[in-house]
Image 1 (cartoon, rainbow, N blue to C red):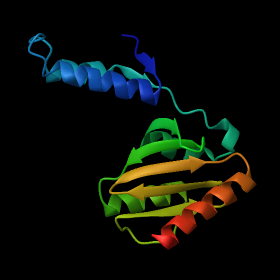
Image 2 (image 1 turned 135 degrees about the horizontal axis):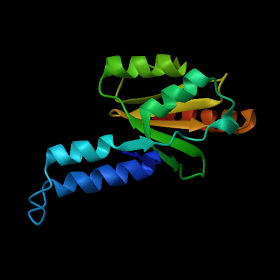
Image 3 (image 1 turned 120 degrees about the vertical axis):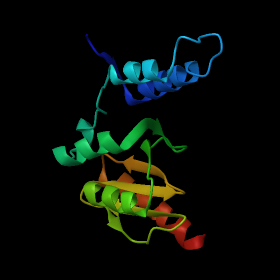
Image 4 (image 1 turned 90 degrees about the vertical axis):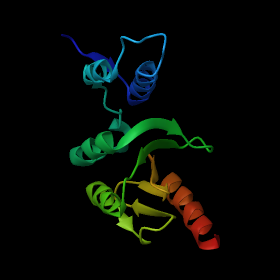
Length: 151
């Protein structure tokens, strides 16, 4: 059987839609086992990160950790994910090569100057911002640092 190919965002919608079908009284024959079979039949297309000059292991980690592609309010490229626990957060930051400036608190940030990327987090939600140029990265990171220093 040929797998369906979807982006991370398309997969999220597909998964939500099919999961809601398991509770739909109008579809009594669609159960959780069918849902599991359907989502296993999907090949998720990796994020196109070629413009960011990331090492292959970082790209693989990003594709395994982050589940949504979006842009910030300022139009910055951003990926969204989730951390289950402090240990999980430590593993994620290690895999991405991020410098942890703060402990695992309610919210904070960590960064990688080598990769022109930083991640903010709050209550387990992860937001990774990637930049094509060092100047944009520096400006955005400084705004983020200022925010955390003032709040």
